[in-house]
Image (tube, rainbow, N blue to C red):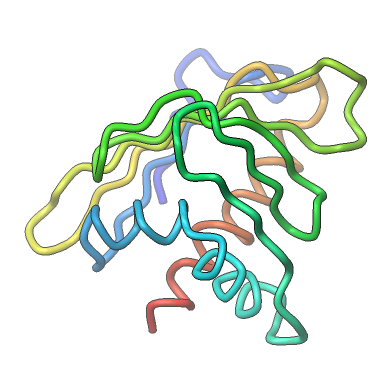
Amino acid sequence: MKSDATQDSSNSIIIHQEIDFKETPQQLYQTLLSSKEFSACTKKSFNGFSEMSANIDSTVGGTFSLFDGHIIGRILELVPNERIVEAWRVVDWPDGIYSVANFKFNQQGSGTHLIFDHIGFPQGLKEHLSIGWQQHYWDALHYYFQ
């Protein structure tokens, strides 16, 4: 994983992460938009104790609820196998506060170079959210495809 530290501080409200996967953009895109596959992916990210539910309406304007309802949002943009943009929030954030999560899938040989940007979340949460993306998304996806 590569993080962009240019003009970035712990008080910034931007997370930029770049992650390489062996899987194709199509595989990653499908997994992130599938209720069944994303639920199965979380089982591995949480040490195999149990699956955490994911309910994803994989259409533009569709809503999603992840990690047993802890994360909710709406899909803002879909470019098949290339980009997912979501209005994304943790349920205990103040009412009406949504951030934007942008997943960009770039073919890299037989795998994918994923560029991820997360903006607009409440100040002071950058480190916590950065760790969460790493553990519950990127690590979980790597384990899921093993």
